[in-house]
Length: 163
Image (cartoon, rainbow, N blue to C red; front, side, top):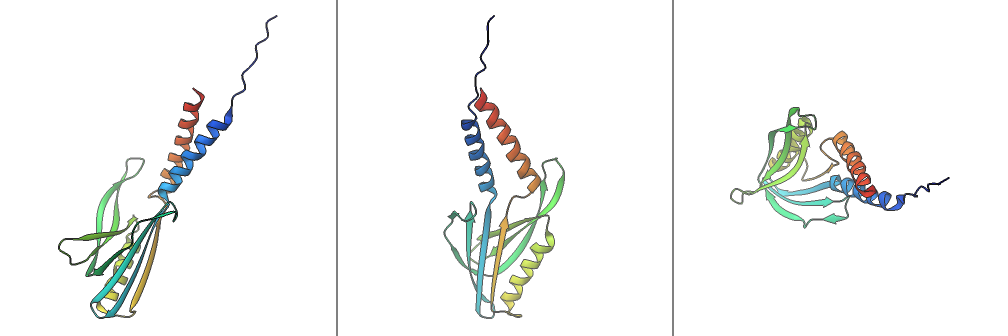
């Protein structure tokens, strides 16, 4: 009688690669932006914007600029199921030619996009406060898409490691 011995699968490389892939995908979605503006006099607003990636582990150099206006841009976005929808992003006018500084992509949340624009314009014309701070996080435009992507990436990596 011939006995077959089954090979033990070494799951550690598969698990390790899967964890790296999942960590990378989660890190790619962990972005934030912080805007701090001061208005020492009416119609003069100086701002600093700081972007962070990988949940603050990597930051881009701080941008300093004079705010001259804020606009909400409407665009068409397509979700993972192929449905189109209106989405919104806020950007700043600096008065340096046609320079435009992007602030944040609000996805479908037009109320928050226009509320932030309103707060910036109020600061610019000197309605109430002389300073403003906005901090926005972007954990992915669609959390279900992010979860699906992480799941399928883990399955794909596991499959490739078994070959």
